[in-house]
Image (cartoon, rainbow, N blue to C red):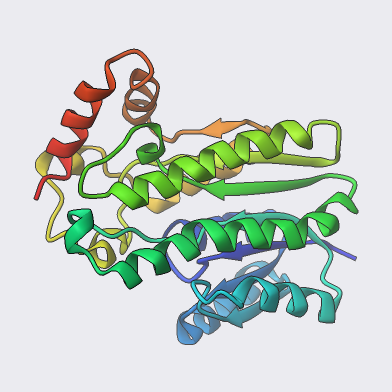
Length: 258
C-alpha cells in the first residue's frame, strides 16, 4: 500500500504548495485545514492531475481536542503515514499588552501545543515505516526576539528548538526530522496577523509559497536539519548569532514597526 503525507494548514500558502509537490511525487495525501470548500477544491484538482489518493479533514487545529481527532481519523482508516508536515500556524501583530489574551493563547495552542501533540500521536506510525519524515514549519523569526510579534516569534523559537532536539533523539531511527524556517511569504499571514502592510524592508524579503515549498521538500528528502529558503533569509538568520541581541531586536522592531 502506498504511504500518505499528512499536511496541516493544507488549504493555502506553503501547506498547499507542499501538497502539490508531494502529489507530483505520487504521495497520497491527508490534508487538514479549517476550510472545507478549499480542501475539496484542492482534493479534486490533485486527484485529476496526479491520480493519487487524497483524503481531507475539516478541523480547527487551534481547538485543544484537534490533535486527538486527527489521530483518531488516521487510526480509524489505518492510513500508513510516512510524512508529517506540521504547517498550520499564524501570528498576531501588535504590542503584547494591547493584544487579546485569549487570541494570543489560541495562537500558542496552534503554533506549539497542537504541533507537539500531533507529532507525539503520529510518531509511532512514522517509526513503523522503512523511511519517514517530519517537517515542522518555523520561521526566521525563531532566531531572535521580534517586538510586536513577541509571542509569534517565541512560538517559532520553541518549534526550532523542539525540532532540533527531536531530530537528535531520533537519529538512529527511520525518522528524519527537519525544520523549515522561511522569512516573509506571500500568503494570508500578514492579513490574519493584523499587519496593515509590511514595511518596505520586510517586503524585500517576501517569497512565493511555491518557491518556499520547493526548497522545503528538497531539504526534507535530503534530511537537512534546518531549511532556510532564500539567501537573504539565510544571511539574516545566521547573522543573528554574531551580533548583539539588542541590535538584532532593534532591527527586527524596525521591520515590523507599529
